[in-house]
Amino acid sequence: MRLSQVGLGRIIGFSDTLISCIERATRNPTFEFATKSDVALLTGGTLELMWWNLKHKGLLEGFPEYASHEAKAAEIRHFEMGIVPGLLQTREYAAAFALAAVRRGSITKDQAEERIEFLASRQRLLLERPSAPLLHVVLDEGSIHRTVGGAKVMRKQLQHIEELANRPNVTIQIAPYSLAEELPFTMMVTLLTMSDRAVLAYSECQLRGFLERGGDTARAWEKDYHQLQVEALSKGATLELLRKA
Image (cartoon, rainbow, N blue to C red; front, side, top):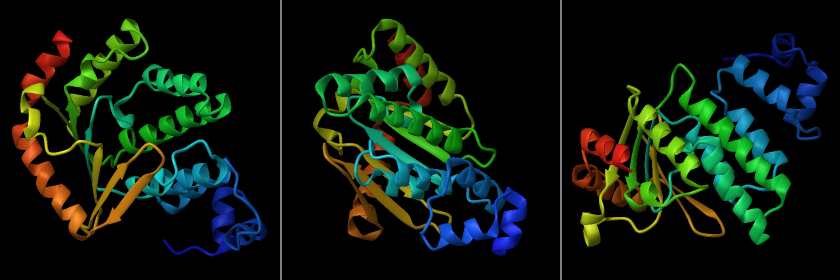
C-alpha cells in the first residue's frame, strides 16, 4: 500500500508532522500509533511488535527481531524441550515462569509483566487474526509432565493445548521419551517459512536468541525437523497422552 504522510495521518488520526518525526526517528511512536498503523498499512502486527522492542527491555536479547519476522510468516514450525512453548501458553502458565524469574532476581516485576503482555500480543496477532499462519509444534513429552504453577494451572494449560490442536491451522505432536537418542534436537528450534518460501531458523541460549536467515543451518534444521515430524506421535496419540496427563 502506498500512502503519503498526510494520507496515513487522515486514516489513523495523527498529524503528518508527527509521522514525519517518527519516520526520521526524532520521535518515538506510541502504542496507539503502532496498532492503528498496523491496521492501515496491513502489516499484520509488525509495527506493534517493533514498538515492544523499542519500549521494553525485559525481553530476551535477539527475540524481538525474531518476533518481527514471526509476525509475517506463512508457516511456523517449532520444537521445545521441557516446557510448553510461548505461543501455546496460558497466561497463568507464562506468569509462573515470569514470577519465578523475579524471585531469582533475574528480572524486575515490571519486566515480568512486560513479558506476559508481549506474549499476549504475539498470541493475539498470530493465532487470532483471520489470516493466521500454519502452526506446527512438536512438544517434548517432558513438557506435559512437568507441573508448572501447580496442578490447577497445569490442568488448564493441557486443556488449552488440546483446544488449539483442534484448530484447522494448528498441528501439535508429542515427541515421546521413547525417541531417546534419536531425538534430533537438544534445544528449542523454530523454523519460519516466509511468503516467498524463504526459511529462517531461530534458537536461544540462556542469554540471547539467534536468528539464521537461510543458509546451511536452516537447511540442516529443516531436514531434522522433517524427521522429527515422522517420528513424533500422531495427532490422535498426542491427544490421548495429553488427556492422560
